[in-house]
Length: 356
Image (tube, rainbow, N blue to C red; front, side, top):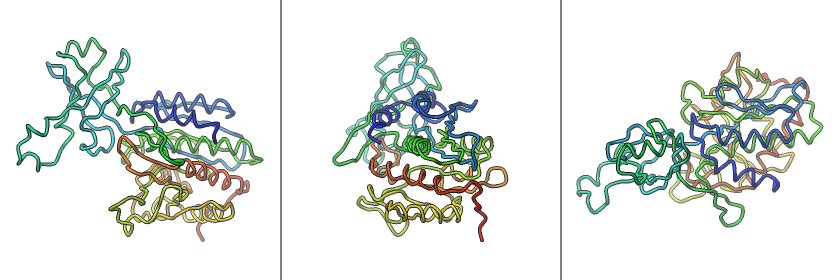
């Protein structure tokens, strides 16, 4: 997958919080057009890449392309921007961060501001920090100046942090969750395109997963449209190889330990068993994660689409989720794509997923 590293870095660096995924979607689409037989984008912003569209069975590989971010809710007379979260944030990691605001006249840089620690009274320090206590400083002195820069209420922003390569094969980015899911989905499709598989395979870069909630985001409408015989969802999960993590609750998953196979809610038992069989046959390391109630991924909405879709959830271990520097192993990305492609190649034209 060395040929795709530039693609991966460009994809991760492109700002695209939930509801504003146009830039990363364009990068994903351009890469898909280099080998897929057809690439389309729907009215919601989901992007589909097809290989062997007339084959059987039809398989959907979904990874959401949005990331968490912030959105301008108010601009005061002095030009300070007040924000709310797009997705789930720990407000403490936002303090002092540089941000990239996607304004109508171009991107604008800003800094997340907070009262200096010296000026906070002892009793105030004990209170939980909330995003409403923060603001963004873009260096102007009035709301008029902010407007002249093209900034207005509703503008989205992301942390201004580019991809960083760490020791070994580790990579850090603010958009690991879940830009790498969209990346792996396309890499798996690339492998299928190079194989002799007769299946119709569609990689989907879905939108608005981080804010989809009960609506299911773009995954629900994508699955409804495609009516796949099988759906494979790629997301991230907590890597538990760091200090102070309760493995009794989350399981044991480490960077470089291979894909994590979900078992339970929204994970079809037959699909799970097939994933395990293929991983072991291919010598791909993996771990298992229990999902007793919900996966909190696109799998939840896809699984219940129409009359029910056999769904498998394959996750990549991720350190420091929902922070400016999430970390994954490139080997895990490669193994996850390999597993998905191998499963697809192993399917016949009429696979039976009925639990027995």
